[in-house]
Length: 490
Image 1: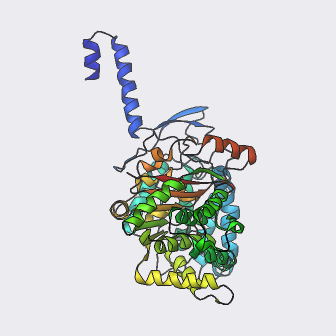
Image 2: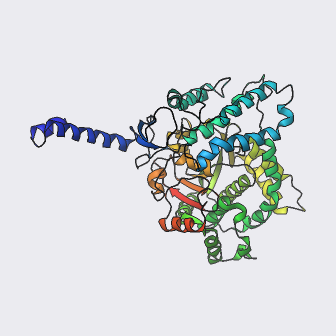
Image 3: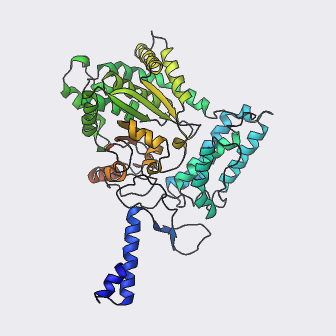
């Protein structure tokens, strides 16, 4: 129709009209996320030896809402010197899986684990030749028929393109490593020695036992938080910064202190924030409190002390009237070493409830309250395969998305791996508004609490980014800087 109209007006030649039509089609398609044409730099894949290659990325098939802005390139692991390259070419095998072997040496070298250990070593051999080893479909007993289908959908475009561990998107291959580790264990096979075996259990246990000394002063302060927007933003700061919080500013009589005192503490906590939506978060929580409390989800990241700070946030949300119920969204199998499963959360609560009250009185009281919340339903745990898959979060699967859309009044997203999925692990402009990238598609109001540990981001203040660059060459990956970002949801 566009072609007919241009020709009828005799404004363009036939070739000019065809070019106009082509440009219009590409522009509309790119805006909707249907076609992604990217120039790949320094790609080592044997598909092309040219300096610059145009490649049509895997199409977005979801009918969910998308980011408002056009989707940028995904992060690959092909560029030496980047965190992604170092992770997939070296760190996953020589650090993570090597430590996994060392901590499970007795089990792995036993006769019972003979087959598991052989598969584990085969995985390591692949990673030691990551640049030349092509990806393959998963084998063995899957977590579920749905999970098997979803992983085939995820891997198909990269396997058909003969992608390697380095040339496929970083997010895909990093999650795939841990799913392949579950395959090596035969994690869902009741006949396997690796059935439901957590190879990271020892690390998690060490993190749990070492968390108490840092948690005790935090739980001492927690009951004194005001039941106001300042209180919830301070509880969120605990969950973001953990033991980096400066508790020396806390007043001795905090329960009777005025708001200005807590404002000073928040100012200290926000010193290394590259964007801070704490006021917007506080206003939203005030609305939930005014209506008698809402349903709040915490999309959990790591076990250990970080999980304890999430529990502290959840405790304040309940006690301050912001939440009538807190649901913890948890991983469905061991992944990313320290990521928390339901069993890890329950073990943490039980451990704190059983602490010696003479040594850790505040932490023990908190543990007892947590145990009560789990028992009476004010806290709930939900494991889902989606949290261990490399889908971008705008591709959230069902029934999880509908549940969060209909039930959830606010979701806190914790940690760097979850944040990468919020952004689809793509190279957004660092100042692109969080609302346009995440708030435009997420199924409910969302608050991201993130310390930077990967070379991507959005919604950061330009002046703060420049300040971070001037202070620290590793500002994007060492956890020194963070963001508190709020989006309204779709």
